[in-house]
Structures are given as structure tokens and as C-alpha cells.
Image (cartoon, rainbow, N blue to C red; front, top):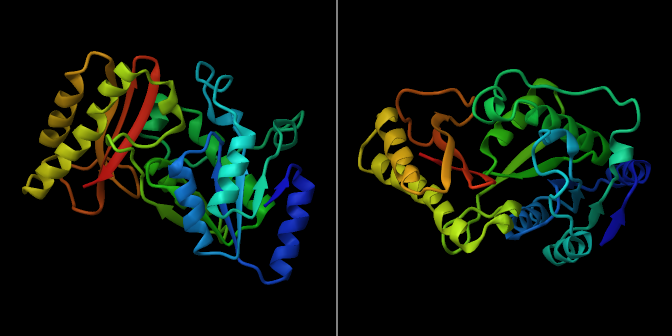
Length: 280
């Protein structure tokens, strides 16, 4: 596996691969890789000749009081994991190259990004869309692989890619969960055993909503009320939002349309912020 630390080298390599007719897949990450990330790398390897994994902790998608400074950085471990999962290139640019002094150009998506995360983290998606667009320009991928766990991010990036005619196919991998049901996340390592036990209320609330829909329930108010009730039984859990929305537009809906709506949850477990979702 090759490690590329600079933008110029990445662009040169990407152009060479395209000239050779090689199909390029990009898996954007912020590192601290877990099996969820690696499943995306493996998925990319089935769809392309060359898999590029970017590792960049993007400061512009963190709010001023969020965990950018303490976000885990484990380069050597990540390199080994990516090599084992089938990556060919690890792209590891520095902040100073991505955002040099005087940098002032950002991309915003004005509709899909507004609800849910857009309310509680208003600058988040501006950072996400900007870095992903830059990665698309640097890596020149034919396809990019993202995880369903970040459902609103997926919807925002699909809209950006279509609106700007970027010509990159987005491939979405399923959410991977640990044996206890908690969705895999780099932030899970922040949880103590007691906090993790309370965090399991999130996947339980999602499963309960799925069970209710399977039994014929379609009323959003009842589904959200039941999910919120389950979460509220745990004193460490503070709900940021629990909402049923259209999976493509993130707009609130009044009634579940099976396969087209999802229940999205964000919650604090003490000081750890977690998100999760399931398609209903």
C-alpha cells in the first residue's frame, strides 16, 4: 500500500491512474478506523481497481466546543488496518495544505442540510461538503463509499454531487453494529462501561420503531413518542432529536412510507454525542 501525504502527488497519481483506465474508489475517513470503516474499504475493493482511503481530521466540520483537539489520531494503526482491508493508497494530507493561510472558499447545501444535524451543528455540513468536494477534485474518483450510519451526510452529499454535476457515483454501505447493537463509531471509545449500557437505549429505540412499523403502525407521532420514551428511561441519555424523515430530503413526514422514511436519533450520553438511524 502506498501512502501519499501531499496534494500535488495525489493529483499526479490520480491523473496517471485515469490515463491507464483504472477505476478509482475513494473512502473518505477521519481515521481512528473501526470495522465499520473497514467494511467500506472492502466494499470499495469490489467496485474498483484502486481504492484510495483518505485520512483527514477535518477542522471545519467541528463546532467551537466540539472534540476536534481530542479526536483520536492513530495513523500507524490505521495504515495497517487499511492495508489488510485491501486499500491501495492512503491519502494523508495536512491541515495546512488543505486549508492554507487565507483560505476562504466553502460549499454549502441549502436544503437537505438544514434540519436535524443542521439545527444542532449549524456549521457541520458546510465543512463536510467542502472537504468532500476537495477530495473529489484531488483523488478524481469514479465512485466514493460512505456509510448509512451518517444518513443525513449521505443525503447532503448526494444532493451536492447531483447539483454540481461532479460525476462521482456514491455507494452506501450498511451500518455495522457491535454485538450489543451499538452502531460502530470512533467516539464509542469515549464511553465508560456504564455509559455504554445507557447508550444501548438508542439501538433499542430504533428496533422498537421497526417492530411497530412491521406490525402496521404508520403514525409518526406514536413512533417518535415510543422511541423518546425508551430513551428517557436512562438518566445519562439526553435526546437532541428523534425524528422520522424522508430518507432523501430529510424533510419531516406525517406518515411512514416503508423503505422511504427513516428514524434518526441524536443524543448525548453524558458528554458523548452519538447518532444513529434505521430505515423504517
